[in-house]
Amino acid sequence: MRALQYVEIGSPPRVVDVETPEPGPGEIRLKVTAAGVCHSDEFIMSLPEDQYIYGLPLTLGHEGAGTVDALGEGVTSVEGGESVAVYGPWGCGRCHACARGMENYCPYAADLGIAPPGLGAPGAIAEYMIVDDARHLVPLGDLDPVRNVSLTDAGLTPYHAIRSSMPKLVAGSTAVVIGTGGLGHVAIQMLRALTGAHVIALDVNDEKLSLAKDVGAHETVLSNAEAPDAIRRLTGGLGATAVFDFVGAPPTVAIAAASVATDGDVQIVGIGGGTATVGFGATPFDATFQAPYWGARYELIEVFEMARRDQVHVEIETYSLDEAPRAYERLHAGQVRGRAVILPNG
Ligand code: NAD
Ligand code: ZN
Image (cartoon, rainbow, N blue to C red; front, side, top):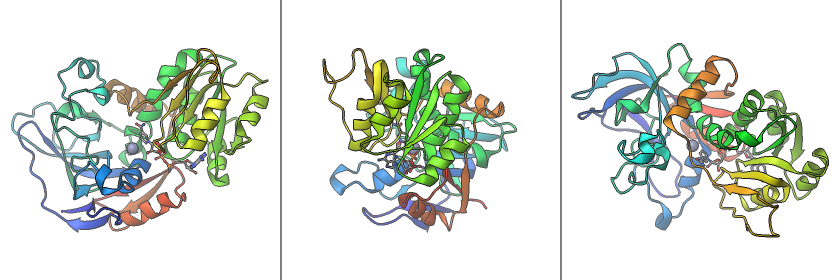
């Protein structure tokens, strides 16, 4: 089969021929319908050799959807041909975190050699992929796999972050979304559908700000050193009830820390290396800073329910497997509107 692999540190990913994988006991093989392209792929491919921990060659793609193609020994809970999406942050399945569905925070996965597809295990940008357990499949039913595949990360990750701040996002509150790309444009829709917050979107790119408006942002502000003042003005001096930073770089974390209200939340979702100094006098009283990772299994089911009720959608650009390297080039150049989705089987 053909797959998009990161083969060599510092080189762009390539389409290569590899063995079609066979499902082992308990595993499921999917014929991949659609696979999303995430900025985190770009991040791991930018790491120097001494920090790169994902193995080479690495088949990319941690947002995957497909049809059940072959069942390993003992798998009885899914049927051939079923349309499914893959829950990516695989855990051990037995510990306290996993029992609560929060496999994203399984403390044992790494030691057990369990890694998400596309981030250690072979990923979804391939004609076929192996999923380690049926519990990591969510039935899609009538949902279009191509339009919805990115909800497995670009939907689940903002949902997990927003859900934990929801008790504060009451009528009259304000939410700031920094970075209105793949994750951010979904976050805006979720905030509108689930909370009473006034939504202010920040980006450095005018086209992304226009996408933010299209998907429901009340206000847009250019992301620069003046942005905290603009946010204070727009909130009558109070600041933002919650700031969701989908860039996480030093300048955006600085904006987040300077914009949050007393008793507000800062959620640093982007992995751009920014850090905040938190302390008495340095940050508003009772402000909470969190750096969440991906989301829980039950939350992915909830995200797909939002899609079924037309509360959230993903703006997509589609590419064939041969064109997949170009999707990464466009992502790198900041040109993707919403999410790039690869169709490995055409
Ligand atoms: P993306 O490239 O689709 O979107 C990023 C957006 O940020 C773009 O619109 C870009 O114009 C904008 N941007 C860049 N610099 C900015 C700045 N200084 N101020 C405001 N906006 C700026 O990326 P994505 O796939 O949506 O991922 C967003 C971030 O979230 C990445 O860092 C990614 O690695 C990370 N991520 C984290 C998790 C997690 O679990 N914590 C999960 C998925 C992705
Ligand atoms: Zn991702």
